[in-house]
Image (cartoon, rainbow, N blue to C red; front, side, top):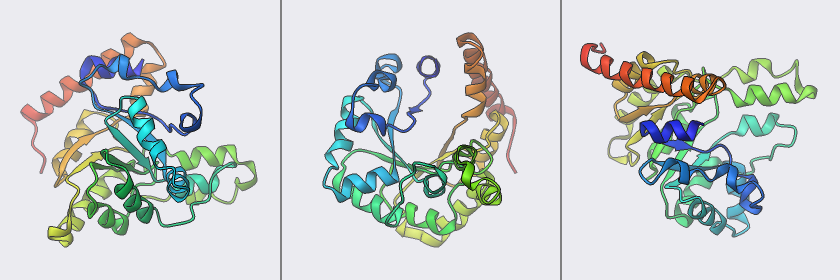
Length: 259
């Protein structure tokens, strides 16, 4: 349903974690959305930093290339999720700095890479290190939208009552735009990444318009929860919502100015 809407309106689309089809094609067709999206829509596979660390350390980086190619995807999203993995009952322990893993991946993987968080967002130091890398984009996945660490805590009864304050830590999308602005100024010519995806708590076109206009880099914005809400109703409801957001953004671009 989401893929049909993305195709209709020309939205880029990223998959959820493709971990289950790295080794086994049993559920491959659940991820095989290129036939629905068509050739023009940007489409990215998605694998977690813990799985990428393991593949790189066991000389299996080719599995990532194979994944992207068999999906006919444009590249790979790397989701950096240390807190989610820590709280997940069956989570993987991340052994080395994610930035080291991403640098190693860049040496062994020749397709575009987007790096995203999963609901906490990136702080100043992480943002600075990521901006130094020749990656396609940084996706904020800021605090304020879907918080996957909080979802894992709900599943992990042993830790409930101890980590509630921790899962609410993070940076909002607006805070991250401010961090981005400060960091770019400090980095100067060291910056190699030129694009960001602003996501995490973006509720509507007004939020999106404001944030992309405050961003000092090429920016688009993403919305997950609102689209899922209407997808749970019907394809027609989802398409109507998508159309309202497109027209609302066009209206904002014509008549509104961000101070």
